[in-house]
Image (tube, rainbow, N blue to C red; front, side, top):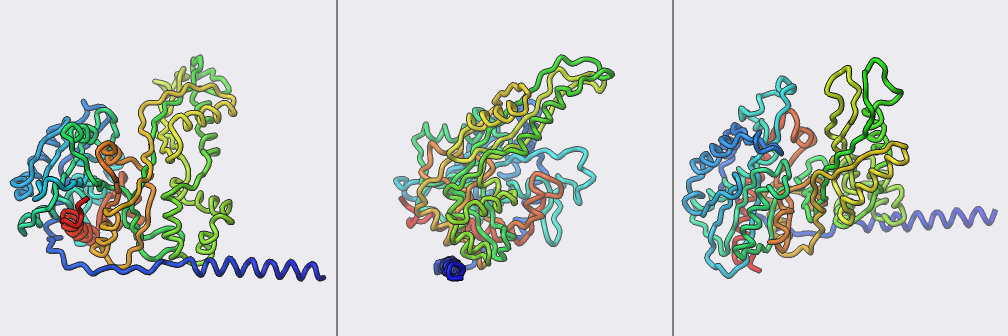
Length: 492
């Protein structure tokens, strides 16, 4: 009896310790200085974003498929729509269609910074055209939203930047230091050596330009954060996963489909793909992911708050919980997704070779070689010989020390909307910002738009749209951020 009582007392004390730690695991007090109203024209910006959508600036890995006339038309539209920008900033075309703008500041000795965006959009599958509420390239604007391909990725931020700069120029604002606007033309296809962003970064390096920081797309303001949070969270990207495309192939003698073997090349390949989905690469908690959960966990309710306040103790349970959500799962492991497949040229011919493209997003601390080794090990365990070829890739970009610019982002968050939780973030996609690593001391990946679950799921998919209110918030953020970062307070 005494033994049982002792165990009960120990359990109660242990539970109390955990609850006390959870009670102390609360947001640090913050003081946000109020921001003056930004004289931005949200109605004009919505109209201009709708116009921007009508230009079919679609990119493909094969340059021969790209309609370069559409990019030329878009360049002309930018010049006509934003006359103050094009009368003041120096503009040059780099690579095939990227645009590099320089806004000269009053003091050339101060360290410049850059704001990034990209002009290209992903294609729309022909078979889905009838599923769209509004045609994807009509740029329809209604009372609630702007619709079309690219309004979320990322002609919205491109428009919001140019609207803010045009407004500031018309007010007579001149920055203390140089500001660069870098518009890539092929971010969506991540072409490596043929990247417009890489070409601009190399040109800047040749000219001896080095940025204090660059600001690109990445994390947004999540209106519906995971784990029951009700306050929107600004996910500010401090690091970025790498990526690699692998071509995984299975060979077979082939033959006539009337006399098939038990397993065809395509069937064997399918078995490998299924095994990869069943056995993903291991989970790991890295910074800034731990910082993400520290920031968000302080606002959560039990039991998640208790778990995150005692993350070391509950790590196995925490990892299983994170794996159940596709966003948090992607933040804690290198992911693999089979996206393309090719096999027989005819329905009655057994394939002699079946191939699948596996898109891999690589966690910082791991490499493409680690991912390739995992694919090979899974195929070997399945008893299926495979050939693995890496098609293209780029390593992960590690987190760097956050300095003045991170605090400037935080100071400008109230321009978007009240009550936003700021959180460091690991960007799971790939952005043009990685190409500026050689010319930037710091890289931030934050996209000042409030997105709900529908808007996030429609990005690169059917019915892509952005709410007018979200666009207005981004306009205000960019206006204040450019004034903040372009002023003498932002000097290095």
